[in-house]
Image 1 (spheres, helix red, strand yellow):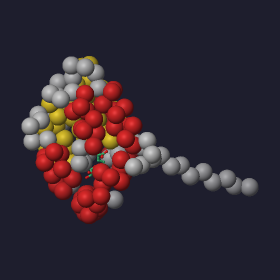
Image 2 (cartoon, helix red, strand yellow; image 1 turned 120 degrees about the vertical axis):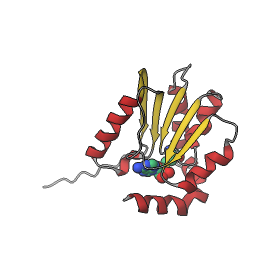
Image 3 (cartoon, helix red, strand yellow; image 1 turned 45 degrees about the vertical axis):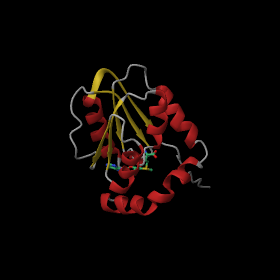
Length: 156
Ligand SMILES: C[S@@+](CC[C@H](N)C(=O)[O-])C[C@H]1O[C@@H](n2cnc3c(N)ncnc32)[C@H](O)[C@@H]1O
């Protein structure tokens, strides 16, 4: 899916998005798990493809004062955490995370939840390099991919 199609796809679905995701088997638990993986004392967290902020809902429950930078190319999705969290340390950037400079040695944790699977291996390598450079020396990156379907064909 190209970037314009992606924007269109999520813009059309934004109203039903949260309810849909929270009813997918294992999804709610995965948001909680993601929050539990964040080390205490993490100051700055980067969320790539943060969408409506479902993972942030859980993270803010555990770390209400954490500084979050959320990047998402779909403005309609980003409007949701903006409305939900006017008083949080939340910097929302509407852009393509492949194009944006993520900076150097800034984030204690970077996360991406259900967002990178659309892209090719080579593109993932590019973003992984940028993520690595943007992390502090003790930093960590967590990626969640919920639905992994593999099709195996057997030839007789
Ligand atoms: C399935 S949603 C996941 C949203 C959120 N992480 C969650 O788990 O609810 C995928 C999100 O990634 C965003 N996205 C996909 N590719 C992107 C890119 N290259 N740059 C920025 N955002 C991107 C989409 O706009 C969409 O909001």
